[in-house]
Length: 593
Ligand SMILES: *[C@@H]1O[C@H](CO)[C@@H](O)[C@H](O)[C@H]1NC(C)=O
Ligand SMILES: *[C@@H]1O[C@H](CO)[C@@H](O)[C@H](O)[C@H]1NC(C)=O
Ligand SMILES: *[C@@H]1O[C@H](CO)[C@@H](O)[C@H](O)[C@H]1NC(C)=O
Ligand SMILES: *[C@@H]1O[C@H](CO)[C@@H](O)[C@H](O)[C@H]1NC(C)=O
Ligand SMILES: *[C@@H]1O[C@H](CO)[C@@H](O)[C@H](O)[C@H]1NC(C)=O
Ligand SMILES: *[C@@H]1O[C@H](CO)[C@@H](O)[C@H](O)[C@H]1NC(C)=O
Ligand SMILES: *[C@@H]1O[C@H](CO)[C@@H](O)[C@H](O)[C@H]1NC(C)=O
Ligand SMILES: *[C@@H]1O[C@H](CO)[C@@H](O)[C@H](O)[C@H]1NC(C)=O
Ligand SMILES: *[C@@H]1O[C@H](CO)[C@@H](O)[C@H](O)[C@H]1NC(C)=O
Image 1 (tube, rainbow, N blue to C red):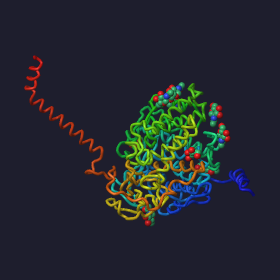
Image 2 (image 1 turned 120 degrees about the vertical axis):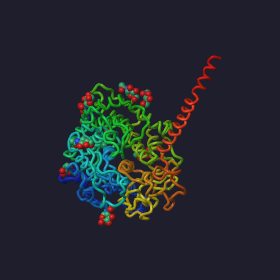
Image 3 (image 1 turned 180 degrees about the vertical axis):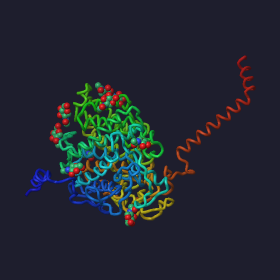
Image 4 (image 1 turned 45 degrees about the horizontal axis):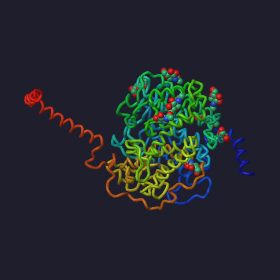
């Protein structure tokens, strides 16, 4: 039987009988780093499949709770069940979900950003997952996140925004068997609102519901594909996700007092203190418009865009800023769902949304934005946003450019955005002055010392860098924070600026890899990077993790500067007061003359 016929038969006859979630077949385990030296001649490209597979594997390593409860069990043999009391303080089961970064906090806000990015990417480039045979792992990863988010949203207005508090701040650096308790849970609700958290969760749920919706087509261009594997489709799950999206949006939109969850709850949840909620609320309305095809949501999104003055902003796309995603999604909707605007008396305005998006991208590429520039080595760097994890904003903008490129206003722009996005992806995967490949375990030049308590095997908070000398476990697929603005990278475990890993850092990598797979491009850059050509630079990094010059942070320096200015003013005022008679005498003399 021809493979095509077999495929046809299996998808048309067998699929309806497959029960529950997907089972990976074949199973995937990351290959050793030296595999990154082998050029792939196959289609789909083995190396890009590995980038995709490894970047999802990272999420397995971040899992909390009972690890065998997932759709395919636990792939990460060095991880254990953990944090099994989460939620007890509210008589709820809040076990599960993911640890946010290198310690054991579960933070909802960056999780929702991550799920949003994964789902949005898979919606248009899901067939890349199929080609890499990673769709079941995508399903497992998304469900692990969404299932927890569902538990964290036990009633319409209640959303738990964090479980656990800063371990390192509380003096814990160690394995997953002795995570300190109690691990308090932090809810927002209608009397203690969190408009940003509600909204961001609504947006993530909305896009998840689209991805699982069997009857949905989302045809961005003639070359992009509708939602990937028919096997991800599950109308029960899709409706469940949509109901959470609707109720969260409804609370966020209707609660009179709008506030960020950090403003409401304070220091305990300061790990992700977002600067505002307006962008999140707008993106959630837009996402719901897309997921439901209901123009009332579109009207809300448009009103938000106008009344919160979101136009022409020079922001990154990350957990704290949804604005660039809003531009791209408005442009997408103008292409895919022109009716949403028309039904509420607005114009589709594809020209306008293209202008908005291209003004943003062109500003970055042409260097017109104040805080945005390229490092000497070619990494997009944004002052104030890249300082504590440089690769994340560059990858996020690369993903936006790649997904927007096919609907740009001209072929020239399409080419420009693709080329710029490519340059960023290549930088991350080895085309940089350090010859470093910034994904753990992908190449001999990958970081060896990601700042991750469970992966490190260390227990000594005072000697994170050296104890143990070699990281105990390889955290395959984790993209680290990245180099500093001078392109240098210190692979030191205690330098969390450069070596920490996080859910949101990795959020774009699966999509970027899926895009490459669909495009049948050549190998990722790392294949041509010579092993052993990365070494730790001399000197000191001087970043927020390991500051130089007496260890003063920017804030402390600013504090001192302000202190000095006030001191001088105070002394001047004193002199003026002391000599007031003389001064008044001089003044009157001068005046009279
Ligand atoms: C669909 O999802 C629901 C909810 O997670 C699950 O219980 C059910 O087994 C799934 N059905 C299929 C056919 O995958
Ligand atoms: C998981 O448990 C094993 C056995 O107790 C232990 O050796 C290992 O360090 C634990 N893993 C982590 C990440 O702490
Ligand atoms: C509402 O949120 C506040 C702040 O987190 C919390 O103290 C309170 O217990 C919550 N109320 C309910 C009913 O969950
Ligand atoms: C998407 O739409 C275009 C034109 O509107 C059509 O040519 C193409 O076949 C569609 N693609 C898919 C995968 O449905
Ligand atoms: C959101 O709130 C606004 C202002 O109260 C209201 O006009 C609008 O109908 C609400 N949107 C939805 C979808 O309910
Ligand atoms: C959205 O709704 C409009 C009319 O209300 C309809 O014409 C269109 O086909 C719908 N699109 C989708 C994808 O459901
Ligand atoms: C294009 O967008 C930019 C940024 O929002 C704006 O300043 C400019 O006026 C727009 N141009 C047109 C022709 O609408
Ligand atoms: C279309 O978009 C442009 C640029 O963003 C904007 O200036 C203009 O007001 C929009 N027009 C309408 C009718 O929405
Ligand atoms: C797809 O291929 C085109 C043509 O080679 C290229 O310009 C573009 O950058 C590629 N797109 C992606 C997402 O890699």
